[in-house]
Length: 156
Image 1 (cartoon, one colour):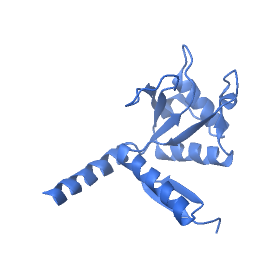
Image 2: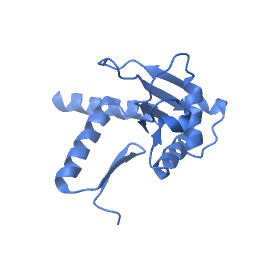
Image 3: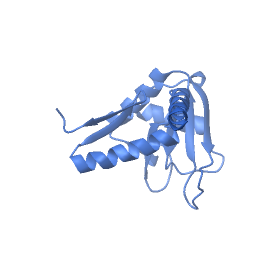
Image 4: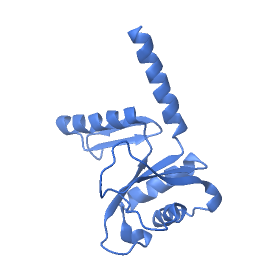
């Protein structure tokens, strides 16, 4: 029974991750009154040198975290029409070495925020463990692409 349950949990996790294949997660972006999450997503894409049309965004909403923390902005989850657009945005941000609030036209102190692949809770935990293992074993890079986890020791 235990092995069957484990196999079913694994299958459910794979299906949930597959359903998130076209989604981005924006963490640490301050919330403002009367904000347009779609406009923020378009500004992020513009910073990544990607032209994003309105019809390419299926939805962009702030979500309630499992554990609410005072003073911490809610995460934005964005579902895009295609995985290719999502990959272009992530690639563009990687080339720019990240993004700050000033890059999307927000006033005040410039703060860094993060745009990530939207992972399931199980996969987030797995990524956290992979990063810890990478530190222990001397790996320099850890990343996720198309539901796969990758580690690399150095630039070569």
